[in-house]
Length: 150
Image (cartoon, rainbow, N blue to C red; front, side):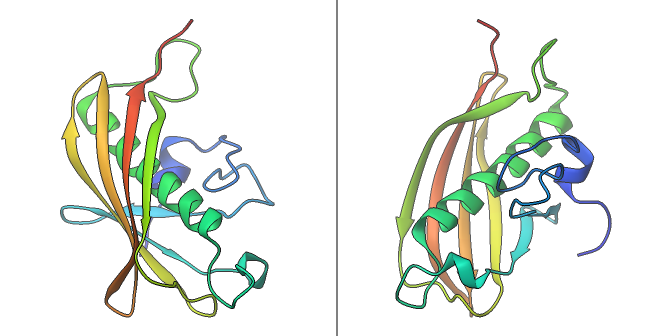
């Protein structure tokens, strides 16, 4: 993919471990819009080993959460649902249901895909999947709620 990532465009100063451009020690996930979904390519580090030579489930959950976030914030931006005054983001993760379907490789890049399944100004639901070798290895349903000041 070429061009600026959704993370660099929508939240360039974010310090999130998974997708924050401002976190040099983080995973630096970069997501891009495509026709009908968002796409990212993630190359695991050897430190992401689950102890059996596969990608760790916590890392999988992190990148699915972060990729769904880029997908959701892209949709929010397209709809004009911007962050309220003083809030860093328009929406935040309210729930993440991850399903591990088969082992994910540690030694080669994996694809992430994100699809908006429902969207309103109060909440957005995103389906995200981790794919390798044409097979879905993990899938998640992410619920994102509108940021509200308390």
